[in-house]
Image: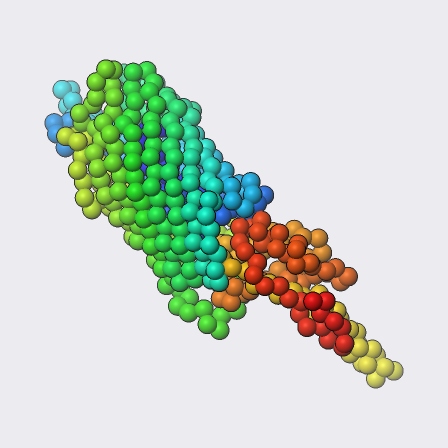
Length: 306
Length: 105
């Protein structure tokens, strides 16, 4: 799975879930990446996240990419420390507007993308009354289940427009969570090595994500019995560096770069459901030459605790 | 006749109350800090044989477990269930029984 597709899937690794954040799957958790909170032994969590992503590049090609996708994640607790997740994206539409010698053209595709499977293990936990602190390594693979040879009337679609990259990819990292009844902090460091297929390899990716979730309702838990739903205000940060893509024996100079996104959002957390939404916006962009960079990513979804 | 029925009903209610009190347990659980996490604990405890109801007071980090009549919850079983949910049991007590019943602790 390519960098950009991974960036789309990463939030659902989570957790869970898978999301795959999860995002999975999975708890009060960031909307754009993972959490270290547990999945109960023998229990499932399910997450769906709709993603609307706009990307663009400068230069003579003046590329605009628009993506509408749904990322589905299922998480399962092997035991109290080990959870496994599976995630698959479905692209309702991936469209490219690009300037060519023939003029401005539009190309698009749809379909299932590359499937991701990963595991998360709670290496350290310190539970205290009304809170917890956890550190959990994560590792996984992305299988080339998406289409990597889709064609239209202009010929084979560009690599970045295919729903899959045709290669096996691997990733690993660590996620940490500090959670209290009032707020939650998450951070994740992740490295992704993308495989090579048919003379092409997406650039490897390194990312550092952080998230603050603050309970805004109920304002106080004093004199509150039972387990009311919480409303969190979110502020997330995603610092992503992508290497240049490898093509044939060389590299694509107009690919990769570094971008810092910030994402305000809102989250409702009940006992069995979470509803959430965020908007990721670029704060700092430093693309390689005329590489694509994100203009905005909207994420809306839910999680279900079975 | 009406008085006898009334007395019988009152007696039954008091007996049920005493039994219920004797079958309630209060668990202090560390690590729970959101409703979604609380549900994980509920699920695991609900799978314990004899559990009738599980209620989490998230603000107090307390889980109240009601057992069916004749069933008991051991601290060991409660600790295992909480651990399976990914959290830590730090206190366990049986609700004070009425009418001279011991609390079993």
